[in-house]
Amino acid sequence: MGFVKKIHKAKFRINTALRNFFYRDDKYYNFYIKYTEKELTRVDSEYVDISHHPAGEHSIKAIAFYLPQFHPIDENDQAWGKGFTEWTNTTKAFPQFDTHYQPRLPGELGFYDLRIERIQERQIELAKHYGIHGFCYHYYWFDGKKLLDTPIKSILQNNKLDLPFCICWANENWTKRWDGTENEVIIEQKHSPENDIRFIKDITPALNDIRYIKIDKKPIIVIYRPSLFPDFKATLKRWRRYAKDVGIGEIFVVGTTAFGFRDYKSYELDGIVQFPPHNANCRHKDLNGLNILNPKFKGSVFEYTDAAKNFLKQLKRYPETIPTVMMGWDNEARKPGRGTIFVDCTPDKYRDWIKKMCAHTKDHKKTEDTVIFINAWNEWSEGTYLEPDRRFGYAYLKATAEALAESENLKKT
Image 1 (cartoon, rainbow, N blue to C red):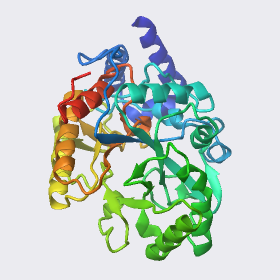
Image 2 (image 1 turned 30 degrees about the vertical axis):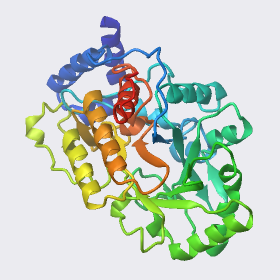
Image 3 (image 1 turned 180 degrees about the vertical axis):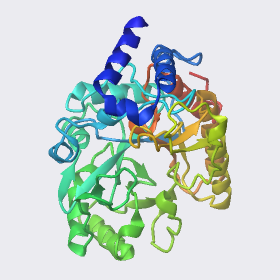
Image 4 (image 1 turned 120 degrees about the horizontal axis):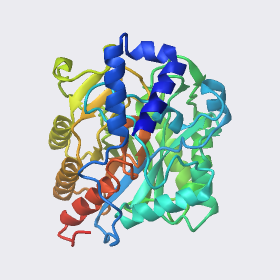
């Protein structure tokens, strides 16, 4: 523990600017050193080791969103510095108040690089072991240019990566901001009739893959922000016509509720997927009630249980919506000192949310194939991930398997 303290003191001495950003006097600095020393060596009482009993199959299919930004690309090198990956953000996070779980440190998989194929193999092994049906890969396509596509290319080239998958097109500008705003555009997203066809042609090998996830025998395509298209109904007609012409058949296209989008029917989409924490509609916690470590903290703090309740209420109002569950969202790593943080998430509270979502899905089943989504498998910089970490171990994976099993009276794993 003394060694950890020396490391942290050295970091602050070397980087005076960082120290001044967070703490203006020694009281905050010394408190922070003691707090971080404690947190970095802490194993939570809810820590769970890996299960030796694989989960059974479930009629409700849980699909986890998957972020591919764990390998370097030229565009990120130019924008953020050589070798940038999501770990660059993750590891720079600092706790802003007492009990704030930062930094997030990975467990079994370590600070992995997706250029190493064994990583995807192990991710798939873990997902299958805990009852995750498949991954929904965020897909970055800009006027024919693909970014962060290493995982998808690996899947299409290797049949041993045998977990079902689908894609979510992140169809907005690639910017130097992390919240979807238009400031400092790195690569512009250009929607046009020509690009409509180029895009559907590009993903045709995936749609034709036997592992690709289908809803009612139709490949599912998730569109992050349908409202950004100049005429999405026309786009959808082009896609549907092309898919039939080349033998794919019918496709199942859904939007997400990101940025308040709801009106999927007028866009002639087949459905809509919740995308928490968008539209959580929670009250801010009073920062005066927190033991603030960083007096400059300007972020927003919410209760995890309030978010769960609100998303369940939204399902009652819009029962046809495909449910999505998240862990405790926290994007402090991407927005130092101004993150959006949902506190008091535990594996038990998360399990309860999944069970309620599954119950709703059963009661309002609209398709032969019933799915829920999980945000996410590996959003480390946003604090919502199923992958094992150093504090909770495999607790969230276990909670997922238990919730799915309990939802249809299967034996717990």
